[in-house]
Each structure stands twice: as C-alpha cells, then as structure tokens.
Length: 376
Image (tube, rainbow, N blue to C red; front, side, top):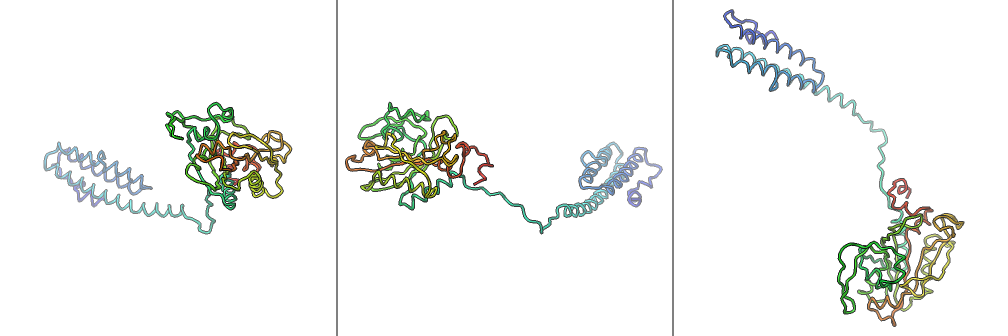
C-alpha cells in the first residue's frame, strides 16, 4: 500500500504544489486505505459488490474525485489523475482477488449445505388413477364386447328430433316432463326427414337413446351395439340423482331379438358385475320408445336391502330399464316396422358404481374431492 502511495507521488508532494492538489492527493490516499481495508474484510460476494459500487461505481468516491479535477491546472490535473487511475486499477485488482477467494469459499459452503445422502430412499411420486365411473364403464363395456356387442358413440349436443321426436316423444308428450331439458340458445337447425324440412332445436342430450335412430339411418340389421356417454338434465341433486350422469344403452335389432333374449342379457350382465348370487327382480314399466317395457331392479347393496336414502327406503334400486323397440322408432329411422324387431335397455353407470363400491351419495363422483377419488 505504501509503495502504491509513494509511486503515485502522494507521500512525496513538492512544496510548490497548490493546496488543491494536496487536498485531492490526500483524498485519493484516504480512499485507497479505506477501500482496501473494506475489500479485505468483505465476507460475501454481495458485500464485495457493494464495496465496488461505493468506491468505483458511477457515483463512487474515486469516480467523484476524478470528476472534480476539471478545475485544476493542466499539470496538476495530470498528476492527480495519474495517481487516482493507479488507485482504481489497484482496487480493481484487489476486488478480483477477493472475489475469486469468496467464490471458492461460498461454493464449498454450498456443497456442504446441499450434500445429498444417496443411501436415503427416494421420495414417492403420487400417480393418478382412473375414476370409479371410468372403471365401471370399462368393465361393463368389456362384458358386452365379449357377448358380441360393438361400442358406438354420439354427440352430447343433440337435435330435439333425435333426442325426443324420433323416440316417440312428440312436443306435447307427457314423458317429456320427466326429463327437465337443458336447451341451448342457438337458433334451431333446419333438417330434412321423409322429404320434409322442419326446424329442430339444440339441447344437451337427456339420454344416449338418441344415438339409436342416428345409427339405424346408416346401418342395416342385424346388429347389437352399446352406446356409452354422459347425459344432462336440469333437476335437483340428491343422494341418487344428479344433473349429469353416465348412461350406457344397449340396442339389438335382428330376427332373434325377443323379450326373453333381453331378460337373459339383463340378468347375465348383473351376474357378471355382482356375482351369481345377486338378487334381482323384473317388473313391467313404461317407456315411450319401447313396447312392452320392463325394468330390472337389484337389491340395494348400500343398505343390504334394509332401506336407505339411495334406494328411497324400498330396499331396491332400478338399474336396467328396457323393452322391445317401439315400431314408431323403427319408422323414424326409415325401417319397415312390419319387418324389424329389436330390444333396447339402459344401464345407469353411476348407480352400478354406487352398488359395486357401496357409495351412499351419487354426488361424490363429481365432487372433485381427491380424498374420494384416491380410494380407487
């Protein structure tokens, strides 16, 4: 340090120097001594950076000293400027040395703090799982595919004609009151059926049965298909009803289709899902698109048949409505009702899942509660 001050002429100022140069040369020396002490004591890279800015920055002490030299005579300005520049270079070198030392120190400290024990077991990553409704739907599909059925899908946004009119539910049919429909505000579409044009409103389908006529318009019998998908109804939710739920319709047309065949299919699917000892009953019912119509109930597995909110205290829950396809449905699809026969049925996937897993409330399926979903 003393060598630098002597070399810069700070300690050997001639007596003829003005008081201005003496003050500035001594200020440069004081800056050198103060900066060097702080650099050597800097304990971190951040502190060293602050020191560098304080003395060598745009508004640093040494920079301001250099700016003040413009008022000195030329020979004095040259002498002080030379000394100050030597100090700047020396400080920059000292800062570089200290930075290199601190980088090594901080890197070693970081290695010690971030050291990993490779003998410890790794963290388990949680993985997703299939939704219970998906599990049940796939299981049902596999059973039907093994019985020779094919899977067919249709649009969730449907025309009123396919959802109601073609299924023997004209505008003023009382059965429409049983399905509170979610109508869309878009303008009705113009469709052509039987050589006539008419408008049909759009809606969120209330039943996957709407796929039946769509399929028959482009396929000839014999065939047997299943039609899975979500349906939507504007109704109040409770333990056994939801505004959105999953259906899977079965549909078979051919010379061998009969009510006895339908009964066998219904009972077989229930035995495949719940075992051979499952308790079921078949009773007459009514649906506009089937005649005759039947309904298969099963003993409620949530309460064991004793009665609960799911089965509405009856001990039974309806799971498989169906029947022989109504002639008017065949007529709407362009089939000759005199020569076509078939049966149709509907499986409520949500209710099957409730029975299979003992779930007391259908609303849990779409609650988005991961505590519920992770159980499957």
